[in-house]
Length: 216
Image (cartoon, rainbow, N blue to C red; front, top):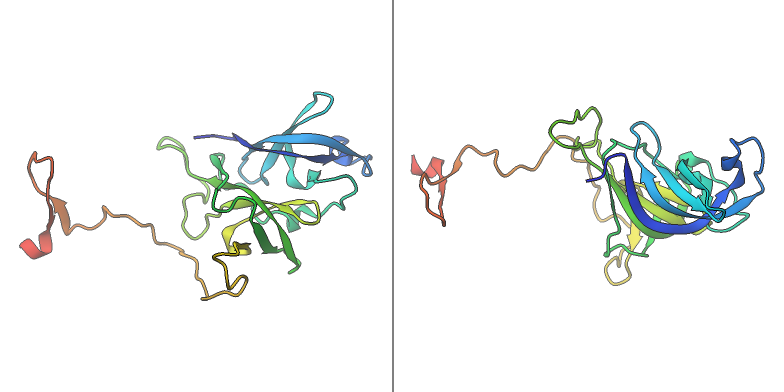
């Protein structure tokens, strides 16, 4: 699985000139580019890699550097991304069941934003020899990040609990919560944690499962 860098479905868009000039000038310039990768650096917003028409390659640019067309007003990154990367171990998935669907989310100013689903970033704790010093495996803290192309031409990254997705044949009560959902703070679903269940002590290929409480 990827560590630090990962491929993403290519995004053809524009990069704002001020991000290529250390915010010193060129705020009114826009350059065609293709975003091709993401970097997951703990305690930093997800960062993106892209190439430009002159062959230039740029590494680790925040999502607010990009827009779908020249002239799109730059949005504060805090209204685009809710959480930093949870670890350096990241996966990228374009879920077929969400592909190109409309997504709504509420930004930090409580403004409802609408856009189109692109793909999802998700984080994990790495292998057994990697120190998990973050929240990627903590039930009450872990979040994924859905990358959304906003209708206003900006891009956003939002977790499950901030978005509603519109699928006309399924979401017939779109945007109207059916139940007051609560975050799972501590439970880790584990089917090998119950001492009352064991397998039979034999070499049988089709072994049986024994309930020790019943058989006592």
